[in-house]
Amino acid sequence: MGNTLISESKNESLEPKVINQATSSGVMKKTEEFHPLTEEDAEWLRLRSGRDFNLRFMNKLLLKLADNKPNNRFSTKEKLLNYMAKALINEKRDTVTANSEDFSFEYDHKTKIQAVYGAKKVKHTSDAKPIVKQEQEVSIESYIETALVGLDDIWRKVREYLIYSCGKMVDIAWFSKLELVTKDEINNKIFLKPKTAFIGSRITADYFFHLKKAFESFNYSYELIKV
Image (cartoon, rainbow, N blue to C red; front, side):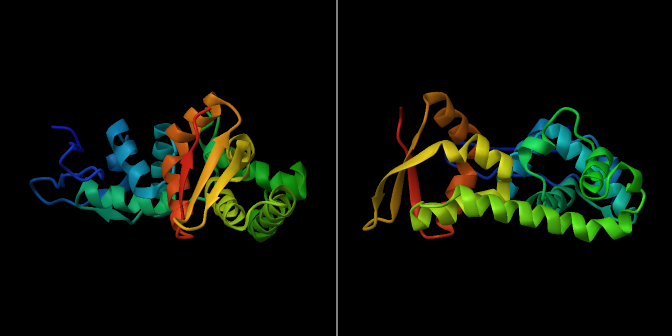
């Protein structure tokens, strides 16, 4: 029997069910003992977190969490996955960066430090962390001020929400390619038109839940117009 069983049918909730897999002896397991996660685990985590990270990144994150919190123990895989889902929800990296084949936590951290201090000062991580975070926030705020100028109020708020949840690069690559063509203020619905059919299909496949959650945050819904 695998670590995780996921059941999904037309008559059941869209959210998959994760079956408890406690050992017969009830032994508490370390975080790293659940490595590697399966693609079924990854799909469940995407639905739970609303973030489109790939399996490779999730397994790297699992090991990173195990390293950061070596005393954590879980009696079932369900509890481990719920813990992972919270970590993914709060993950600051965008999916474009995290899902790249050459991503590593160590390299990512050093690169951010170098961007502020230069290569010779990478070792001073304790002093660099708050400044790196401040630089990132300024960069995002600067992008929002220029990229969202002149947009409809609701669409601007949705885009800003998406930039903070998915990352600036995702917005540049995908959400900026959507044009608001109609706003139904009676039914609180916005109609968006992608620049190309390919862009529309990719957004539907990869970011449907992100858009849905963003619009619902402002009591709106949306529809993509086919090109």
